Image (cartoon, rainbow, N blue to C red):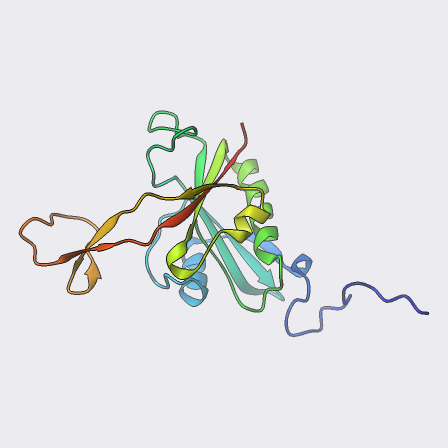
Length: 189
């Protein structure tokens, strides 16, 4: 009986057959934004990040992950506005459908190691949006601890669009429930 390798050794396929075939690099914000436009449910919605990484297969971008300061100014048991330095948030993560199983968790692992080489990292916080069916499986697989669902919140809509900032008093619009998100943290201290 002849032995066969577990993975195809040549890269002549049209898609990677193993997450180990992906290569990761630091990328520009606009490159990450293009990835999210294609593969993230928020599409072209803007985001703020400090650093971005790309996942490549055969010199083609197949995913992105972005990190920045946490939106929350306080997270009980982790930080407050005075101790937030060194805490990061995964702002966005998306990969194309050609990426094989375990690609996301491998990408998170690589990017966390790279982040720790470049910055002080006390911990990382991230969210999985229950409104689009996300439950945080990739974060659990990457060693994050689940903290449950975020508190219920509402957003103010004017002409069918969320009003991100500004006054609401006297403005014709309506308050709608926001989808709750699963909160995950990974501490390094």
